[in-house]
Image 1: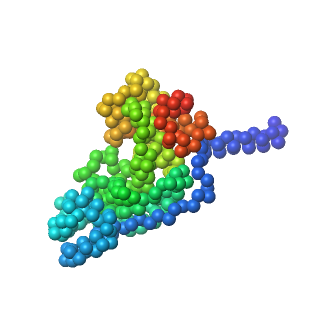
Image 2: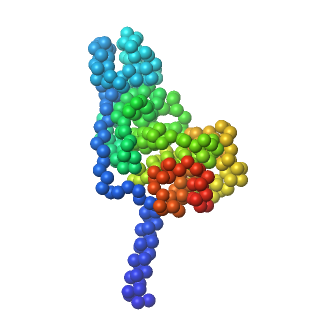
Image 3: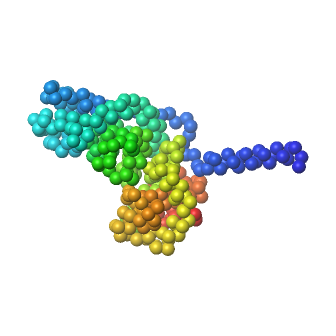
Length: 338
């Protein structure tokens, strides 16, 4: 083999290896400028309330947060926003309660969320990409709050609230009292951007199909997760899915067997609610497939089919993928054969 030909082979092999390392389409130009996102720190001002000055502190909160404060009082505390007399008694208990661990939780929240610049940067990139795809999108105002272990993401008109106490680390002791073990995986600060943006996309791009088969439901949700993965292309796919690497790898290793089982059972075309929730809802496993299969396996399958569809249809844009409501067409034109 002459030297020149040897060099050619080396270059070709390197090119193939680089291509394999960067498999998949790139949808966003590099020159997109990040949006400036500033998270409103309702949590800090709320936790500065003191019982000795409760009446004045509550008035300050209502003045400073004329939209969010009434929402939070009514939806999180379950108190009519106009009933400030009752609020004066309930709020100190909520902030300082030791029986349910709120006092310790709020202290931990202060430390973990002392700096949110990383979150703001991540949101700035994500919403810039969403705006590039959908220029008419209204970027919501993001509020950080404490929820008493009630909700991680909370929507209002042009508002998204982030329940910071639901993201204090998978090992936080008080989570043992309020959630199942399988839910702890995503209860980390770094999971917030994906949780918020995916929830925002589900609201912005609602389900429009008139069919209620598993195929239609899993393709809709799988498409949204595929889009989320493109927006957060710097993250491992398993992080976007909210799984561990081991869970993702198990699904990849068993993908062919999973697909054959689903097809053999003809579950794709079933509409029974138990089948749909079994494949799509969160849980310790997907019982319809295997107790070794992580929950929400149907959404993962929808994601994989959407990925295959886009790889085989390079002329289709992300917007066109999301607008395509014919799940059967996407499946057929995906040539999905694990």
